[in-house]
Structure formats: C-alpha cells, structure tokens
Length: 109
Image 1 (cartoon, helix red, strand yellow):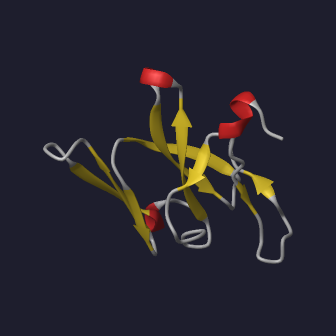
Image 2: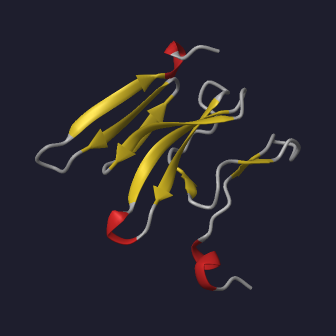
Image 3: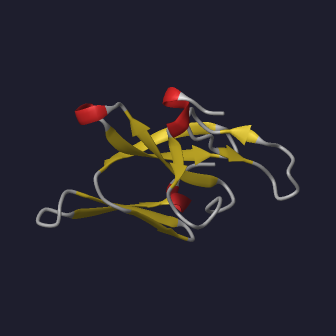
C-alpha cells in the first residue's frame, strides 16, 4: 500500500519486448511524453516534474538508450510532439507561443 508522498511516485522503466534488459530511467518524477517508443531505436523523450508548489516546472529530457544518459532539452509550458526522427515542443502561452524542434539525426552516435 502506498502512503504519503509515495502515492504520486511513478517509476519509468524501459525493457526489451521480451522483458529483458529492464532499466529505470531517472527518479520518481518522469513520465512518457510521446506515443512512439525509442525514436530512431535510440532516444526516449520524457517529461520530468521538478520541484513542488509554485516553484515547480516541467522539463523535457531525452534519454539516450545506447549510452544510458539522460540530457535536459528544454523547460516546458506547452506540448511535446514527435514523429520518426524529429521532436518538437512549444513554450509560452497562447499569445506568445513559440515552437522549437530538434532533428535527432543530427545528434552524434
């Protein structure tokens, strides 16, 4: 039974389709952000909830499966979308919205 702060805890794990090679990504504040799994068979975009209360924010992170490294990409206040080899996200509100993109093929192996 989960109690207290454990109720909001989420474990984000990746594994191969056969269930092997299970690994946890980050701590308890990560969640999936796009429907596609392992973009380019290498990258998993995740959103991290950082802080609590009025000082909290969301951050877009990119997990590199091949190197097991997690890299911060951007602070979020909008949406995240991905398709094939590109991920893009919005910042700002409806009046000042700006879109940003990252071509994953440009990242070194």
